[in-house]
Length: 208
Image 1 (cartoon, rainbow, N blue to C red):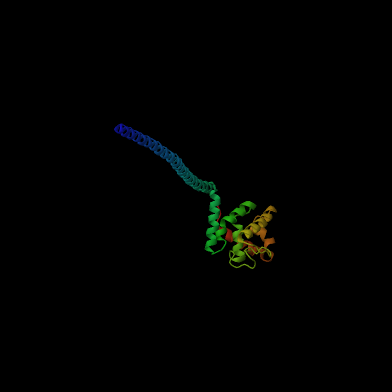
Image 2: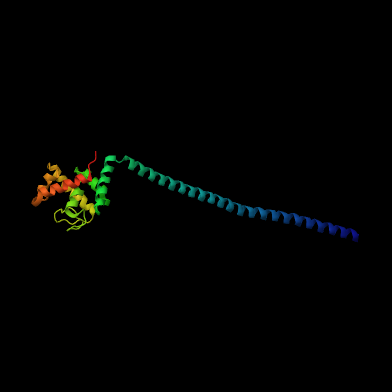
């Protein structure tokens, strides 16, 4: 009877160990699954975020590249669209004023634009500046290279546009040559002034 009880007790203990092993296995498996659930979404999210960042960076590079290309294209089209005659006028004025070391040389395009705006000869403003102040090198008034009254200008650009507008008023009255303008522009020595201005205009050159 004693041996039988011992065997029965051993069987119970073995059964308990098996049960404990099964329970431990279940718990361990649950722990692993729980850990995987907690970790995996984070990893997936990180991958998604990385993908989004990569896409955004690529988009930025794409748009930046496109914008640069568009600007280059716009500038190229703008340059091509300019009238060849206008480009020649600008070149003529700039070349002549550079030879005279005039500070107005870099404003050649401004001079031509203002002439076009007010319908005057594109050479007139540059020519008058040479006669009145050696092209702006010797002025009695600030940025006033044309002896234009007692005016002081804030910049060469302002002077160019103001004088061009004033000369446009002469043109509107039919005074379209240095000879006709000189009577009002420089009464004391009109013929001499007109001759000198005409000479400089011829030196600058016409555009055919």
